[in-house]
Picture: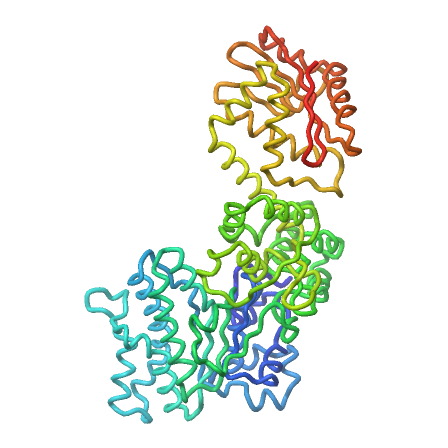
Length: 564
């Protein structure tokens, strides 16, 4: 039977013991041990395998592990390394992705649950001959539940701050071996706290928790933390001199998060999907980690799964749809004309040059729009095309999936911003039945200037026209008492836009993109098409007494409107 695809499964043991397909990233273990760092922070975008790698580390190092999980994998060939390290360490492994809440106390309760549940897995400490009564009492403080609610832990804030240090100390006493500490999604509590207004409280708490666990922990062998953002050292890692940070810009470990081209080739061969390599590359490749080109694993696995059921399935925005994409919305909401032009360049397949700041606090993102660009790079919405002097890089959208996301969000942003100015949009719409061509043209030019064009110089003419068509359509649909139809069958074809007003005025609009910049010629072509295909006939059949015909031509941010 064919191996299952591990959609949404980030547990290494579950994947390996239940016959799921697995891309071998186990040499990450060897490299981690060779490039020794007592505290290692890996920042990568979401859905690029951080949690699975954390789970793999736990399965490899933890005392009492199952060595058969690694049979047939590359790390198993490193016999001396496996003999020395596999199954030899107590491991504390937590994920902070669920530490959330509308206020600080709710978030602390969630953090207590995460650490309390992990501590409860070491109940043998209550019977350990290597712990005295004082030690056992310290352990009990970690696992005691609130007498008022069996669902929550009773540990005090002081106990919580010292919890990882305490648990490390007790495990080392029991096993006589230093502890490996794994913390996944370390930055989520800070991001959630910032969004809900208790950021300062959470920063202070996380700083103390991690300081005790990573800086003053004599029982620590090494630690690995993962997250999307590199939160500034001054913010939560103050005084932590043993921290090694590995971002998407670094060459070291570049192949262990995400799928390489070889990985994708392997999975497509395994499932008989090699004919889809080009479309998968167009949609889901394009990331650059260090010196390696990387695909988004979440996208590749999801699309392969769909293709196995439906070979004609079109690619979708799997990665983009797993987040609220608030960062892009924030960029659009704060954009000035320069930023809008830069977004336009990116959507058109170009690059922009920016100075990156990879070490930020959540609050820094609000300080300047330049910081938003840096975070968009760190979180996978942008990728590096070329490194320049200093910290400057040329940034681009990585692939079609992210480009389509930007286009959708730009359309939403345009609709929200234009509809908010009801007086302006009413004046624009009123100019159509009034046959006020100059007002229509002038206001369209203003809208074009204020908007972000999502045309693509590499696509067919009708695709270029779609952007302008959509913009005009959204503006006209704001009139609730008009019947506004797109590509409506009228006469012997389909007009771009047809309007029926309450006053029984019919309006036909045909839109052209002037690829050579000849707006006059494109307008004449639009009006000729209206006549040749008799687009007005459908409006007459609906009882319209007066018919107005408009030809519109666009070229970049220029436009022309003519009336028959």
